Image (cartoon, rainbow, N blue to C red; front, side):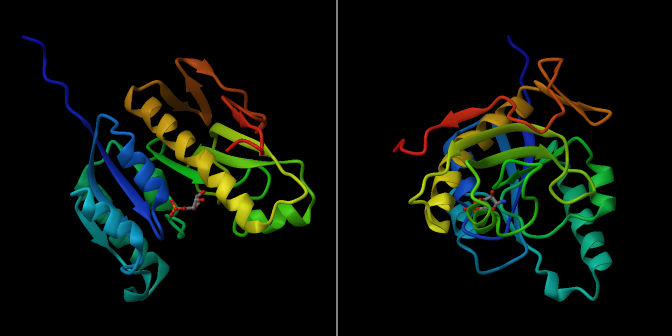
Amino acid sequence: MGALTTLKRIIILISGNGSNLQALINAKLPMQITAVISNNPNVYGLQRAQNAGIPIICEPFQSHTSAEHYEHTLLNILTQQQPDFIILAGFMRTLGPSIVRKFYGQIINLHPSLLPAYPGMHTHERVLAAGETWHGATVHFVNEQLDSGPIISQARFKVCKQDTIDTLKEKTQKLEHYLYPQAVSWLLQERLQLINNQVLLDHIPLPKTGKKQSSIQAASQNP
Ligand code: GRF
C-alpha cells in the first residue's frame, strides 16, 4: 500500500475578474484551494470560485478602522487556514509586514510587467508611453516592498506599433495564464526554494539580475 499524499493547502487572494484564478483552477494542479479571499464582494472572481466549489471569504478594507486593523484581521484569517502557500492573483492591496514575515517564502505574486521595470499600477500605459520593445509578466516571491521580491519566472512578448493598452493587457494576460500555473506547480512539487532572498529551482540558484529567467518568449504576432 502506497502512503497517502496530502495535498498542499493553497489560499488565493483576488480583487477582480479572476482570470488567473480560473487558469489555476483549469490547470487541475494537485492542490487543495482551501479558500479564495477577496477584498471586494462584487467581483467576478468570487463567482468563478463558487462555480468551482471553492469556499470564499470576503474581507473589505472599508470595514476596518485602519490599515493595521485590516492587516491584523487578514493575518488571523490566513493563519486559521493553515496554508502551505498563498497565491496573489490580482489582489490590489499590499499584505502588510506581519503577514509577509509570517509567511515569507510561501507567498507569490503575479505582476503585469517585466520586473524590476514598472512596479506598481498602470504598467501597460507606462510601457506604451516609454516606447518599450518588450513587455510581459513576472512571478515573484513577496517581500515587504511593493513588487520587488525575488523573481521566479518571466514571460515576454515584443511590443508592436499597433499595440494599445488593451492589446498589451490581453497579450500579457495570455502569457500569465501559462506562467502562473507553471510557477505554482513548481511550488507544489517543492522544486522552488527561497533562501536568503535567493530563489532556487531544483536546488540551482536563479540569476538575481531581474533579467528574463525561465522565460517563455512569445512573439507578439502569435495567436
Ligand atoms: C493580472 O494582470 C495580474 O498581473 C495583476 O492583476 C491582474 C489580475 O487579473 N496582478 P485577473 O483578475 O486574474 O483577471
